[in-house]
Image (cartoon, rainbow, N blue to C red; front, top):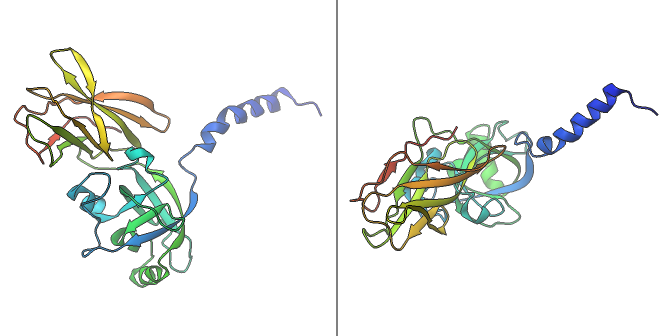
Length: 252
């Protein structure tokens, strides 16, 4: 059979678009999910991402631990839409959760906070039934994180000690971006110096520069490639452990 030019052109378009279509975030992946308990049904401030209290309450406590999606810590902070697959109990939109911890279960991709897991149900009674299952079949996809009114925030980790040890946690990353690396500006050498990924999204340096600290972040995203964004605000020289500083950087 001889193909016309119109059919040949259509075939070329399909071949060119196939990788994009296969990688589209509109498609769901089948998996399983379970939950963990806590006194107030929120997340845990001791999650492996290093978020602290932010990891307990972000997204109104709808958070999760992951394993396959962990990506050596760069998966921390990612947002996912999770839908369970029991029609009589499950809400059609499911729950949106933020990755705040590492966790492995029985063939599960998500170990959700009780608050997040309850939002899989279409109502309170349905959610109660889902808790009885313990583990449910789900489908999930990555979705943009939306923190209205927030830029990327650099929070000095609680274990930091000025001027000997500096560690920073990256918070409020909008969109579908992973933070792959963080660097600080070394004024005396006139160069960017990499911070070590201590764990999760905690990056540190044993010998921080004196004076103000300027940071830049290497981010990557679906269809966005890999690139650097630089903080427009410096962390002041008198920085303190636990303090949070607005970078004035917004990812859309």
